[in-house]
Image (tube, rainbow, N blue to C red; front, side, top):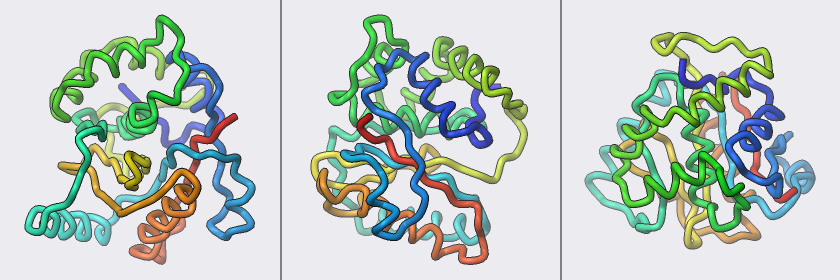
Length: 227
């Protein structure tokens, strides 16, 4: 087992970040709904949104078509976007967290001996594929997650167990909203955003996921917000 955040409460994410050596200046909070009055309850600023969604046949068809379209037409992706591939089964939660923190690392207050800070510093110049390989052998993050999951009394599946739920991260890098999914070959640029409008813009992306699978109810979003 490497990672299984899919059945872990959102509060456990805070514990996971704390054990990785991040000061609690930022916190994960629930996004209770997508209406303006519910979004207004989310503390600001928000620097990342994690979306949990089901991997369905409709989504996989869309993912293939999206990849082909972008490869044909191209897209602008800033070189400062930190992106890594997912090569470990059931590791999407950890990779979503890394994407959220890595693309906001200048805002984070790391402990001196933070294992996540070291991982990011070591992997900054690596390719997405190299970062994935490095994570496979990075014992500190694996042990930290297992410890957090144990505290939350969450039983992890085997590394080969098929899981049909998936995490992605949505971040603002240089005024553009990027979807970061380690199952995809590259980041997805969803257009312009700003610090003030980021949460609303990210939720619009989340709505598209829901609209593609209107019969599905297994969607959840959390925001990484200022504490």
